[in-house]
Image 1 (cartoon, rainbow, N blue to C red):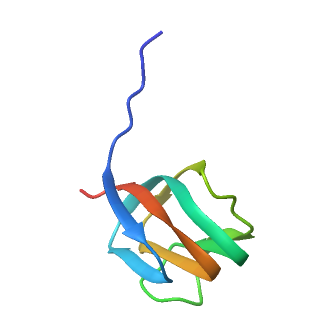
Image 2 (cartoon, rainbow, N blue to C red):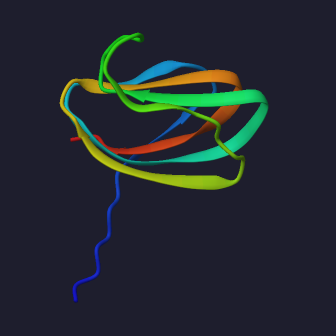
Length: 92
């Protein structure tokens, strides 16, 4: 059985942000800090508000969330409370 090695761009976030405009493939999210009622939501969009791919969830610090999926429009991370981490996605 072949070994799968998925790699991609790593972009750190500390607030809600557009991480990628245009098509990409999300690989996962590493959460380094999560406190004060933290929440995360992942959108297939270039602005906040529409295109939910991963609904609101409560992340745990020190956890990698594998979230493989095609995002044809873009990648937006919405943060609530105090959350920071790194999103891994294919940049090209």
